[in-house]
Image (tube, rainbow, N blue to C red; front, side, top):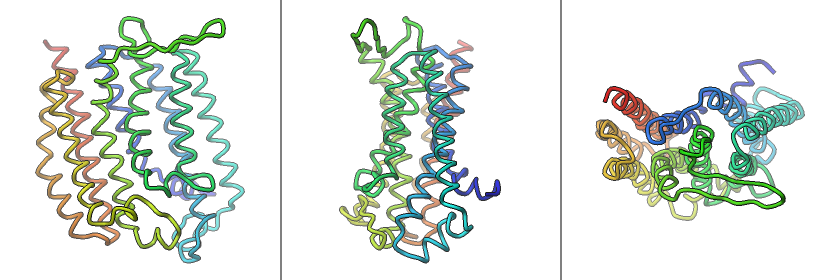
Amino acid sequence: MSLKVFLEVVEIKTKIASVFPFLVGALFSATFYHSFHWGYTLLFFVAMLIFDLTTTAINNYMDFEKAHSKTYKYQENVIGRENVSPRLVRQMIVGMLLVAAVLGFILAYMTGWLLLVLGFVCCFIGVFYTYGPIPLSRMPLGEVFSGVTMGLGITAMVVYINTTSPDVMYLNLDIASGKFALTGNFWLVAALVLAAVPLICTIANIMLANNLRDLETDIKNHRYTLVYYIGRENGIHLFSYLMYASYVAILAGVLLQVFAWPLLLVFLTLPKVRQNLAAHKKELPAPHSFVYALKNMVLFNSAYVICLALSLVWQWLR
């Protein structure tokens, strides 16, 4: 397998979806919790990226194995199109999964065992999102699983590894002498969830846009997604509502003092986002329509990250 084919199997271009929650989690730790650890953060990034590559490889492998259309299997799916050995892909998946697991155990040992619990839940959803007799991606709750796992799960884990000291820890799992206790601060956890809402919505919209575009193809391949049940028209409305909910979360965060005032600059992206929503609706179900979901996610979350960075600078200058 060449490097070019490998990067296509793991869809390296889509990894931006996991990078944004990572960056938001790191910057939110610094701006809201006033705590940050370079070493833990970098180690987590490597483990997260490897696992993200693994889940995408699993997705392409399962689509290849379960494809009912020979055209899709041997002309569209990268494994069939490039004549890649399915056995090699399986070995690659297992290898990357083991590396990510080892790094996760090391990080949990250094920061706290709650990370292991959070990581296990996210990994379980990530693997069975596309693997098994009934993958989560083929169910009507695929958008929920993808949005919450990446948008909230990654953000929460990044914040957790950066808030390990007792004075800033928002959640703690204590295990001793066969007993365990989970303690936390409700308001600090609520602030984290609010910060993750824009990520949950924009990442869920990526899958929703994919399902809106591929409705007919998915039905042929026995994939009955949310769009199949609610219809394309309602799916288009949901796509817009999720995008606008991201702005509502930012405004609520500023009003509740979870965010500093520079986050209001995110609203400068609203006109372009509205333009992309209109273009997306007009072009459906053309293949190119999907690009507008990516544009909105990158535009909104880039502004989100930049504004969090500006908040950090503003706090430092005060």
